[in-house]
Amino acid sequence: MSVLIKNGRVVTPSEDFTGDIFAEGEVISLIGNNLNVNADTVIDATGKLVMPGGIDPHVHLDMPFMGTFSSDNYETGTAAALHGGTTMVIDFVLQTQGKSLFSALDEWRGRSDGNAHCDYSFHMAVTDFNENTKKEIRPMVLNEGITSFKTFMAYKGALMIDDRQMIGLMKEVKENNAMVTVHATNGDMIDYLIAEHRTLGKLSPLYHYLSQPEITEAEAAGRFVDMAFHTGVDSYIVHLTCEGALNQVRRAALRDQKVHVETCIQYLLLDASLYENESEGAKWVMSPPLRQKKDQRALWGGIEQGIVEVVATDHCPFLWEQKLMGKEDFSKIPNGHPAIENRMELLFSEGVAKGRMSVNKFVEVTSTNPAKIFGMFPKKGSLGIGSDADIVIIDPEARHTISAKTHHMNVDYSAYEGWEVTGKVTTVLSRGKIAVNDGVLTVPKGHGNFVKRSVS
Image 1: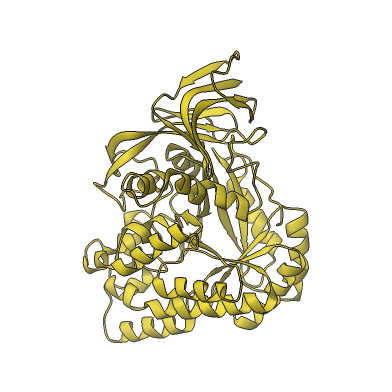
Image 2 (image 1 turned 60 degrees about the vertical axis):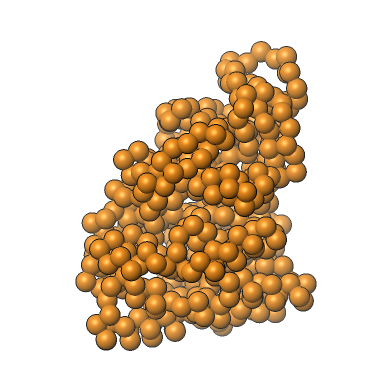
């Protein structure tokens, strides 16, 4: 199988030119102008953008949570990802407290193997760090290619670890040249505020937001940054949402400490006023919650300054019926919202088309940076010779409207219903195969491979 993409505007973080790309088998073999080669398929990309396929390093597929599972499994979630121009995802394996990391990995592989349409990898979420867990870190890195270890500073009693465990994990991960990532919010303070609001009968979705004020994230981010500085471990904050937490990263930079930062598309576009809608506010219940307009401005600025390096989704969808588990009590609403299909087009429309970011920066935060940070570059996130032919073609002028009636995610509402978007994914290649063309998925489940990652 060979594919020739002709006359496209080829964009990477550092380049922007009109040219051709030739993919043979699973990789890119030629890049140039007016390439004279025989190809099984020729795509005329005149007037369109040709970019590395998107990488979403923060998704939760078929994830157990609050007695139910996220509604997108590996088949539906990765199909939706491809429709939206994302050709690689990284999911989170969640250790069960009292059990091993490898038992959790086996459980997740039982859901993922043979079911994914696009390539994928795993982060390992450590929820019970002890002497046995410590011994699993090295083989997880060296043998399994899982090089990032997620920690939770919230969700007490289920996922949260204390600072003693955090320090121990950081030191072991540092020994193996791997990375610690964090959900940085103050779980004890949040639990106190949740209990207080419930006692007072304040049970609407608005109180999910009010139970997690900005200070709970800023404090935890600062504490995590300080522990990472002490241990010297490579560190990454997932789904950073607010100005206060971003300032903790800026503070760290004054002592020449590098902390990788991810935000998510929802925190750039949506705000906490949505929680005032009691009948539908549950759609946007996620943790951390949506913030204020001033936090959106801070995050856009952080992207421009290079402090915020990745825009992901934290895709964790639940059907409306599942969300209604908490119709009488916000603390029982499953946390998460659907976005895996919308990230690339929304960010292009609100970022590039509206002049908030360059098209080069768009490629950087949606693809190349995640590939570099998580040990996949230049195999992924690149349009270089020998790189996987994961390629997305976007029509920058096409206008369309986001709706649950037309999306491919397995969820019966859209967090962006009626949102008018400029820029549409028209064609997607996954490892050299045309995976989506004009809205039609053309690769079967099982096409997606697990990607082993390397350490920095």
